[in-house]
Image 1 (cartoon, helix red, strand yellow):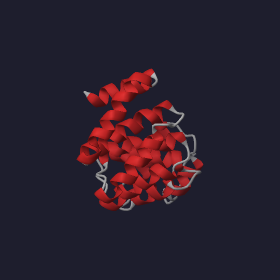
Image 2 (cartoon, helix red, strand yellow):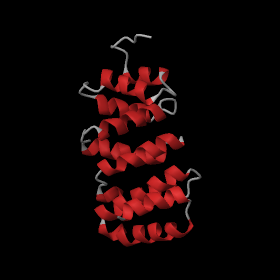
Image 3 (cartoon, one colour):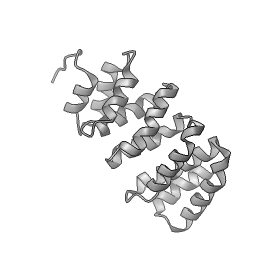
Image 4 (cartoon, one colour):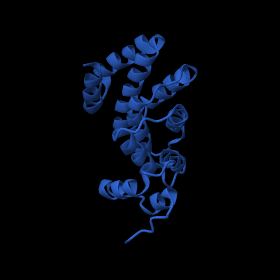
Length: 170
């Protein structure tokens, strides 16, 4: 189906719920040159209907070299608490490598990540541990606590989570 290129990102993401990565890359190609693309994608990520596709688009944008401004980084951090779907949470957790956690949000972010290491989904847990490490590296007062959690998880987490933690610790 040929899509109207004037369709908003939110609308196109809504009709592409469950789309393949290839289809989402096409959506990205149609919209990513818009000056407000990242703001539109982050807004779409707040909507439960489009959260998974929008967070995938946000992650793809960051993976392709876009550097989010401070306000966008704060929005990404806020999505950690807002995202109800495990896939959306996973995408946001995978975006943390591109985010500088402001000091005034470091405790809240660390606490949110501590809650996420209890998630039932092992992929979310693995990337939440990665997030703890990121916060610890950015804000030294959290480093030892983060390392304690990572080292403890090496003994009692699922093999896939332990593999991610070993990669973090290299």
